[in-house]
Length: 147
Length: 147
DNA sequence: TTAAAGTCAAGCGAATGTGTCGGAATTGGG
DNA sequence: CCCAATTCCGACACATTCGCTTGACTTTAA
Image (cartoon, rainbow over all chains, first blue to last red; front, side, top):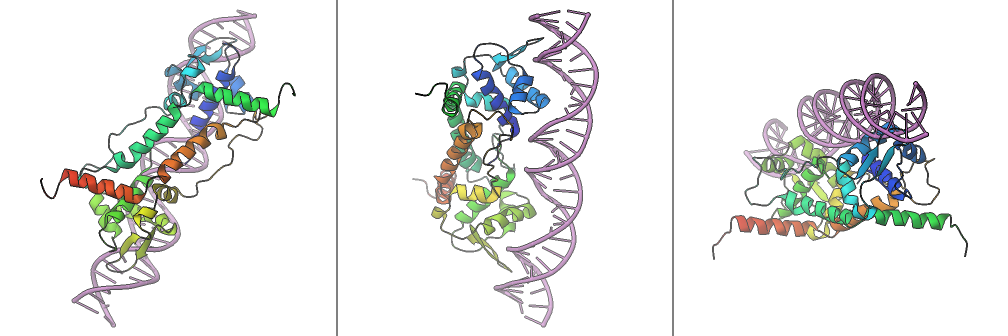
């Protein structure tokens, strides 16, 4: 199983925004530089996030992006769905004339259940969870104070 | 989330073999015809299944494929893994110079956990489970005897 | 006014997905 | 022994998607 850079970069950008101390706009350029990501490509990825209402943009100098909602109210599923575009839910991909007579469709028996499991997993984690984990890891790696 | 025809067709083929009454070889041609799948393409998909030791081939006339093990001993994960080829487990996809100093890696925080969830789900279901569901659905759609 | 940003559209090379084609090797049956 | 069925193998082709670049335009703070 391989995850596209599209989803990975987009998730990184969302995490970067979530880790931003206040509601100060963070520019795509800054995110791209700090994470060594291609700037213009990242820009493309943020667009669907904006369209999905997950981030808000501030144009002009000192502009950038901020989360449109508290991190706790944004699930990883929201992010992945926004990035993956129209999920193209083919109700059933069995070809029209296929042996289908016995009423069983693998799409439901296997892939839908799997998709449900994935969705549940992603829906159960919020961007705030991720941010907190990131902060904790940061603390562990470079603690501000030794005990 | 979209599943490739590769995995879907391959799974259908495995189910077809699992539903085969005895250990009588089932040819690719027969599977392809019954499920309206491209024959030569399906042939390509069965090759990795054979290499993974999930099916056994019988060449020549009246030849075909049979499951190499009882359906209960083949998990859906086995099938998906065999079809997806070398899973290419990049330990960490963060670029070398990336901001990584704080010791946190999204790959582990998000994608690895998700992959684990997917693997667990697939590993928990056997081809026998799937076959039984298929038989049950078949029964429901066209019962042999009315009560 | 100007520089820093977002916004939009187009395109492009490489990889991947989805097959197709042709042919060699093997085997059972007539 | 021969033939048809079938697996096996490799190459190729076509379309789509991925990952990314380029360039032009708009908006806004300083």
